[in-house]
Length: 187
Image (tube, rainbow, N blue to C red; front, side, top):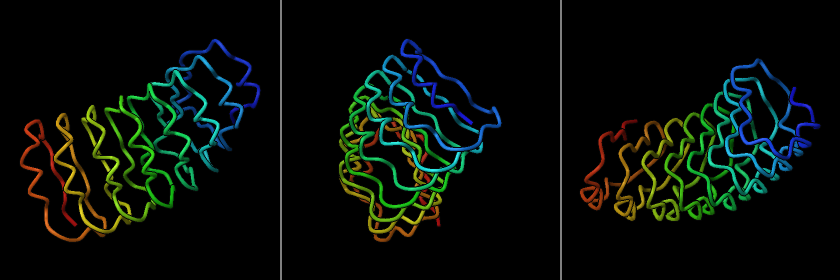
């Protein structure tokens, strides 16, 4: 369990509690870590929601919460993390839609949301992330078509959309992705 007193560590820049056997919820006091740059809580048994207070971490560059049992929606407050480069929320029980506000994260390089229970369409706003190098949304219940604006992701090297409910054709705009090395779209 992460104690709520963690919020008192206002000078903390890196919090690495990955693979520590932690359970329980992420305390909302995590939003008080005003100097934090890396928050690594992956490969634990954390449950409950991702607290919206995470949106207060203006210096955060890496949010790594993969391989837990987190549930609920991805908080739209994440969109205020203007320094964020890596957002890894894979292998949880997150549901709801992918918030279009993620498209405001102009520094984002890696976005992994695979192996959750996400529904709805891939928001067009994701296609405005010009720094994005990896987009991994596999093993969800996403629907609709692959946005044609995906061709705007000029730095993308990996796109993985395997095992979703996507329909339609592969957008022709994908041919403009000259840096693309991995494309996985199979059912």
